[in-house]
Each structure stands twice: as C-alpha cells, then as structure tokens.
Image (cartoon, rainbow, N blue to C red; front, side):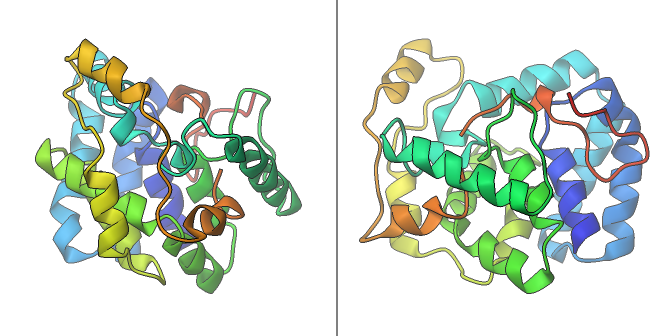
Length: 236
C-alpha cells in the first residue's frame, strides 16, 4: 500500500508544474497497485487526468478555494480536532517527534498535521500500523468526502479510499458533529471570516486525545515535494 499512499499524498498537494508532469505516472501507479475501491476509481482517474491536462492556474485556483480558503475543508487535520486550542501545540510537537523517530525529516516551513505529509509518513510504516492510524482521523476523512461530494469535486475519491483502508470506520455521531459546523462557499468572504472565528469542537470523551498522539498543524501544499514519483522536488 506504500506506493498508493504516496500517490494519494501527491494528489493532495498544491498543483505545480512538477505535479502536472507526474500526474500520468501517479495514475499508472494507482492502476497497477489495484488498491483503490472501484467506487472511487472513476473520480481518481478524472482527478489525475485534470491535473495532467487542465490549465495550471485554474488547478491552483481550485485548490486554494477548496483547501486553503475554507476551514471546513482544511487539509490540516488538527484544525478539525483542536482548532486554536492550546492542546494543538503539544500535539504538533508529539507528531513531529513521531515522524523524526521514523526517519521522516521535515523542513522548517512544514507542520506535521498536513495530510499529504501524514500520508507520506504512513507509507513508511507497516501495513497494519498504517491502517490503524488511518482510523484515528477517519471521521475527518468522511466529513471532507461529504463536503467534496456536495461540490462535485473528484478530490472526494482520495478520502473515500482512505476510509476504505482505515482499520476503524468513522463513527456517525462524530461525522455528523463535523458536518453541522459551518461550511461556507469559498466566495462568501463574510461567512468565511465567521467560520474561522468559531471555537474549536471536540468529539466525545477522549476523542481529541486519541488523535493527538497520531496526527498533528498547517502548511501550504506548495511546500511539499511530490512523493513517490521519479522526479521529486528536493526538500527545502
């Protein structure tokens, strides 16, 4: 599953010329590994084709509107768990240490809970461990998938695949709690400002702590190299 996780990690990074050039190779890896659920395969094929063929500036604008501007679609996992609470800082430190113990070194600009970085780490771990850790934020993946489905975005398929591999499936009450939070249109600046001012929400006894040791804060997708392809960007 390591190649597939690296491929999915790459698909969730900010679109660059390098990603556009390697998108066909990423699609080939996903096809060869045959680990993507059939229900998600068509959307993933659409996504890799769009990344390879669409105008780069249009792809970048779409990415920013989806994942950078809208808090409810943030790819920084602790945004959905800790918000701006004090627990977030320690959680980030814990996860960074976990990465370093496994030999995954981060640049000074990176924060540990950026999902592509988390997937790159899981690609280095044994299969059972990776599936167990995917179960920790499974409710986040489910909420993101639902919101992307509402927007008719092929990025939805990445999260459907992650849910399929997670050892623990998302709990409906936790998913519902996330989906009840504001999910404004990316062009509604007043609603976006209001959403970013909301207090952080925790889900159930100990749920925040359960993710805290596994997952951790915030980095631009453009700062990540494209993992698992023949021409990766050098780490800064």
